[in-house]
Image (cartoon, rainbow, N blue to C red; front, side):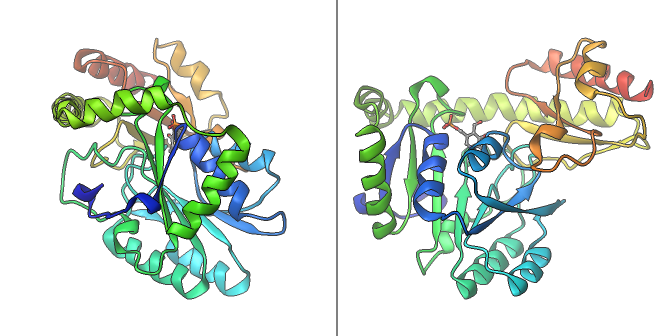
Amino acid sequence: MQLHSISAADENILITNGSQNSLQLIFQEFVNKKDVVAVESPTYSMLIPLIKFLDIKVIEVPFSDDGMDVGFLEKIMKKQRISMIYTMPTFHNPTGITMSQAKREKLLQLCEQNSTIIVEDSFEEEMKYFGKAHLPIKSMDSKGIVIYLSSFSKVMSPGLRTGWIIAHKECIARLTSLKTVLDLSSNSLSQAILFHYCNSGSYELHIRKLMRVFRKRMKTALTSLKKHIPNDKASWVDPLGGFLIWLNIKTNNEINLEDHFLKYGVMVSNGNSLYFNPKSNNQIRISIAKNNENEIEEGIARIGKGISDL
Ligand SMILES: Cc1ncc(COP(=O)(O)O)c(C=O)c1O
């Protein structure tokens, strides 16, 4: 975490069974039934059932090319109390967009003024391919209002079920008590394996390899998008890192895009499932995680054909 300018002592860290477990602990411990939380719109798909399960009230904050609309949030916060904001400022899921440095600072300032907790989910912090570095919001958090979480799932293996939370020591103490009640502790065998892997230097070598592979894949994807997608029919923002690209398709046709693109032999995620209140079905999420460069170019060419035929 020091590489990302986040310093943390043992008392600021809780090891969890991955980020989904971290989110459950955080929302269960810090949000009451009467509270309102703000989330980016669209947001991480599995946050939606979690929040619904916990019966928490939500405000969706619109999203633009440089992250959530902090001006919109500011207006909302003048009218009502927001107790927590969940954000993925770096390589946001599903859009791949990175929040600008100015917005990060503004969001932190706003939340400090309103005593609102920021939950910063940085699930792919390592995977930065292009452009200058952005500081995690946690690295600027002098008042201890940011709860930062990350995981080995995306860069190592989801099966390890190991993630971490970094936060103020009182916050970690509360989360630790809740975690003890719910599942005693996380898997110590996975932690021992990861400890030796990281200590031996293998983790850093692995990340460097991932960076080489995925930077190339993302470059291929972005070049292919320019080549194959008719730009009067779709728009997107070039991600600076991560695995995801979000396509806004300009169509009035009310069809299921997952089914439509399957006819062209491509599997995409329909944007609808990533909103609390689905509005339109003309957005799709493309992932470069599973396919090699040839497959990515071929897949995007097929998407381009599918878009042209809409
Ligand atoms: C934004 C985000 N947060 C959390 C998670 C959950 O990760 P984990 O496998 O560590 O529970 C995911 C998994 O896809 C994710 O995309």
